Image 1 (spheres, helix red, strand yellow):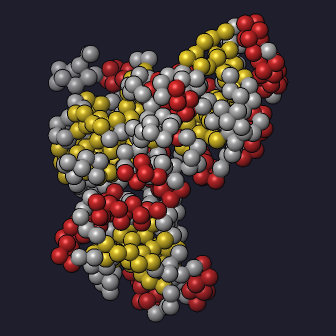
Image 2: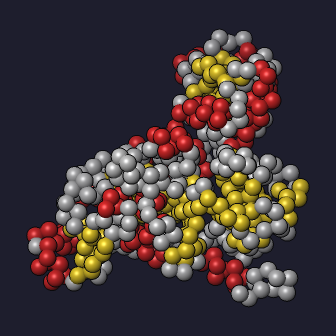
Image 3: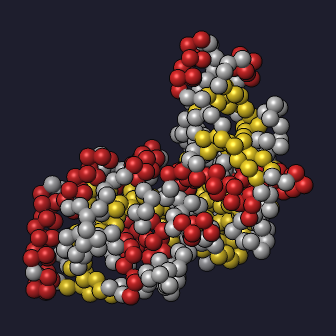
Length: 533
């Protein structure tokens, strides 16, 4: 590797390494098969020997990306995970995201760190509510989307009808790269629309290992599959007539979405998805700072924190801050500047992550995700840099809709209770709100969805040894306000003003009618929605 005299890779090397990176997230509605697809991609890249989601009562294993006990018990993803591996001389940074709607704020943070998204759609259910919400985030952030129709091995909707739904609900023109041979529930393989060849899949035991693939030309495919292949060709020709063919410029511009068909649980179509990500997904490129000025990938090091996670290592109780490298080269041990404080920050303990497993990383390039261990000074949205200062756009918090008072069950464990609350707040598991009236012993925790409270309570007990009680409050929405408005709001019924740890004052209201009444009585009050941008 060409390096400068100081030992740091030169700009040309950094640009070349950035071009090798593919950093993407998988988004979907709960139970669309997202974690299973994540596992299958790692399997096909041959970085694990067996998929976690094997079938059978005695043989079921947890996926690599779902490492929390609650995830394994419930079979859902409630924390995001980063997996990094190499495939075809390309470095894949795959960010798995929570599938449950209650954890959409965590997914939003992850989407701030990716260059592309894979939108997973259940063949039987089409585009569901959570999928559409996440699609809107991708569109707002100009993130190109590859669509995967999953679970084609099960009965589902008609393929052409699904294409119509994608277009009607997203406004993106679907441009299938592959087309299913065999209707949903009878998945025989896929037609490669560009080359006209047929890839036939062979099932393996429980989908635990890579599915066999055989490529046939059109004549051999028609002889082998008969009407099923003929129908696939005819439907593909209908797509040709509508000009629903892949155009790279239109895809990167967010006007089209390439579509593929797969069965993640059987590992059908996964290999083709990996190849597609390498071939057409955007590489790491210059990312705009807070003022909209792009930071070139070969500029000195910069990055931002998009997630903080603790409790991954029960032996060490450490805390991991995930950073997206935006420019330059990250070198373990380097001292960077923490943009929000202007103070130096040492990166002695840096790791690359594969689910829960980690290994020390000495070097990382734009597009990579690095975990900084015990980085207690870092919070979500913080920027780090070398040389010329750069501050990347903030990652807004969602407006909480559920509120509870949390208290320690055992007063002798108040120190653990306080430490746990502080940790959950730093990670963004819940939003912690305080007031002089309630005091530090009974803070209010706010959440987007109720399951966040379950995670918070579980971690307080099992991670911090601080059993707690949660008492629901009769509030359902929050508005940002100012210090000048506090005295007026304090006199209103079913209204409470609390301070969030970032300094924001939030006015909590029982419902939208109470908010409307206060606004009508006091039109000069500052009551601003907490808008996600």
